[in-house]
Image (cartoon, rainbow, N blue to C red; front, side):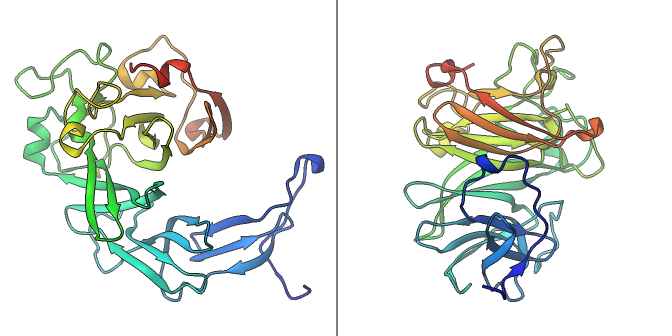
Length: 314
């Protein structure tokens, strides 16, 4: 139609490779979500009203929209990419399900993923008080805002599974504190002192992807410049431990890749710099967007995952 709104300009490099499909656009700056064709014509738009879009919106098979929204009634934990609210809305933008997870202790952010059983996976910052952080080996002398993953049953609003990064850290600076050990010998654990800043937001996960074949969760960890893979076959208690689950690691990292220096391997090649959006697009194939950071060069990697990922853990 002549009255279609044009969202922008399109430059086509290889016309023969362009599929004739629609693209779901999550326009954070303008708080819009819309479908456009490959010529940037907007063909459908959701009415969000006064709701501020977060960093993710996922079109469901029935035409409904699952969206991460900003919850601005709480001013706690508002780092870049913050959310705090998740909604499932119909084609007109009317909420069908509304879930808030935003307090002074925790807040969802960035990305969400719907599981085959209908439950929702969400990334969440959680506050680790300074005393607890120090006892766990932190050298930061402040409250930390580390990462967790929660699984929400939208039928009950119950959190039915959760994973917390604080349960899987290691440090090599103070043998009188918890989690002391050689970092390079324990790549399944997360160096709590790898990064430092004045906010306590040390990890900054910005993307989540679910592998339904192997029941694994892929996490894009921006400030570590790598991908963490964790086992979802565990229950919550096992996810807090170092054993059990399909891969025998409990909630420890089953696999990680992109930046070996994150676990003190200075010899292996580093690929990722401030990565985003993990994407499993066919069995064993993986896409990742690396912003480039100080390199001033963005890169998209298409990767073949190792067979060992489906057979054994690191």
